[in-house]
Image 1 (cartoon, rainbow, N blue to C red):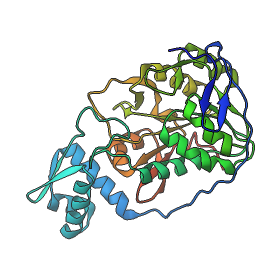
Image 2 (cartoon, one colour; image 1 turned 180 degrees about the vertical axis):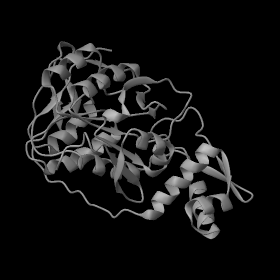
Image 3 (cartoon, rainbow, N blue to C red; image 1 turned 90 degrees about the horizontal axis):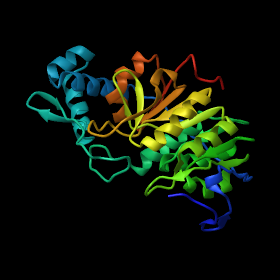
Image 4 (cartoon, one colour; image 1 turned 30 degrees about the horizontal axis):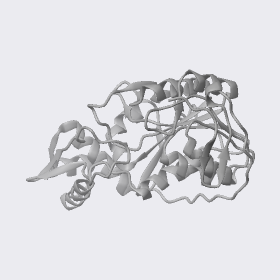
Length: 311
């Protein structure tokens, strides 16, 4: 489907020729707020347990207690919590790893294995916003988590957004201090995001310094993948163009899905995940040289010290 002009949202009428690769500026100003939370050793231990169970398939409470130098009572409490999160299943005297069922998508209402709740989305959005700053040109990828981050960008002076998600435009008008550029392109079937060669050409024209993208899967070799082939073309170009890249991995992998590569984990400046996703990919993060810089009860931020910008 190709879009001409006359795109309308409540409170805004946008006139543009998307199929000509055009863009347009919007200029607005707001305030935002980002709240820090303390890290916790409890979460780290539970992440370690989840990783151990995943690698072993099944393990006993006594073995976990010996490995982590804590009591069996503590391990049982941790296993009960991880079972409630859908990451493992308790067995007699231990735990068994449970893989995520096939066919689940980001944000689908599935309990309790992989649901990305509104609270987790909001925390991911806050942590995303902390990776950006004043006077930066940011390509903000598609999706509801990205959209929730837009209000938190209002505190940055002169920050400009380059977007391919039409649903980002209304909040961007209300919150972003700098320009908002909508890439040209073709609407993906059933989506509000613009992709294709025209979108890639438009992105090259603006050459953002930062990009933020949603990732659906991380391969054993550290390859970042998305399920949409048209989106992969644009996102891989964004990773190539931008000096700093932030990846959001909001859910555990679904191994039956199609995968299209967009970049490498080692080339990300930061990766942000819910805690259960962090458990799934913990070893891949450390193998890529990432270190955990911020943790709370919901999400973690991992940074690449060699690529992360000084703030």
